[in-house]
Length: 487
Image (tube, rainbow, N blue to C red; front, side, top):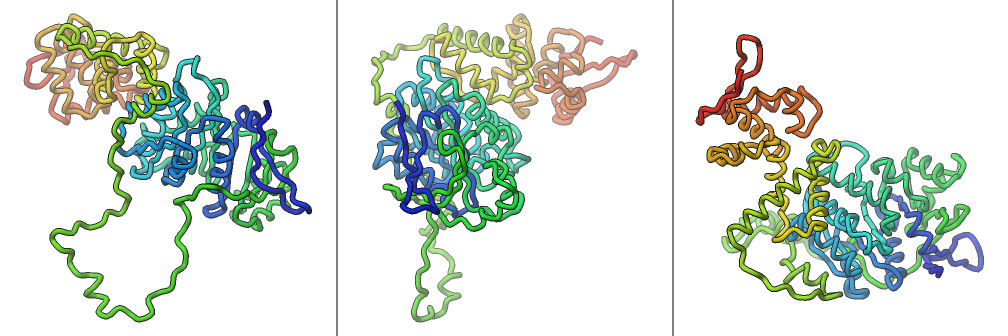
């Protein structure tokens, strides 16, 4: 069945000819939208989602909260990411696919790093859903350059890599899983090339920089001398090309929408007719004791009653009676989780992958194995990962002195805990000090230089003392407990 979504009308001809997008072809070939701020990208995305809502499940990654109005008209579930954990969003993404619920992920109440982390978690939940739930899903990402930047950004490296990995999975590997990426960006130069390159359909809006005009012209198969026309496009006009749109570039004026956007700029309003008297006293007066200063950003909305229950409401599951958890069951759960972490790290090059990627692999394995009890939160997984990367022998971990090593490791940054535990395990067992390559693996890197710096940092933190024996071999002593590696 072919579903034609009318985007608007072709410009330059009389009478007006409707421009349609083939929804089934779009699901197979993906879409890239580019244009300067204010050119009408969000309006175009809203038109596409409104017209396709009856035909396909939708997910919107919304950094500014512009698309929350879709909920009232089309029944989308709005998830306020500011009040959800990353693990909760992974499960939410998985359950959204299972129950085919259209979702708007509202990221407005978060800083850039928080937006990256939570968007990556939700996208990974969509991507890792079991095969039987690989139904068509339109994934719209507004301001995609925030989640797949082409260069360095002022956020943590782990958050950047997790977000970029999730976006790459969506655009490069999502087709077989039914995921159709629709990404919008202000500038192609800001968007990672491996993400942008997977789109086969293009809608190019108003652009002013020469480099962006030239690149847009290249993508549309136009001559360089024609690139100047991108400056002349009006708000809401785009040049369209692609197998789901048109075989030749065509100028389209996007049609009207049914829902309102929160992203429209403020309108001009007249200034007060008479000047305010004593403006300095009015503006600079100290706030009353009971009056709080208004925050710069919108305060996060109160958490929903139960997000996962709302997702499951589309197809209620059989209730499961809660049973009391015994100490033996908790111990068995801990052993099972530790074994699952070891299985994750046993994969080739797993020790060098980002924590977020390993966590998704861990969650999928836990669901497949149907482990009893609740899944590990990200914080608990990081602790288990540190022990797993340290490759602590079971006989050492079973000794009564070992909890003291874990307590000392908790004072270090998470990425260094595995290094300390590896050194402490060797010292407690009286074994030789691990080599630089083994320490680098525990640190999640292949660089022996970084491994040496990690050991130096732990020594500066006062947890170990490092010296050399008479033959130049490294000896490490753990401060306060009297453990030392064999020379």
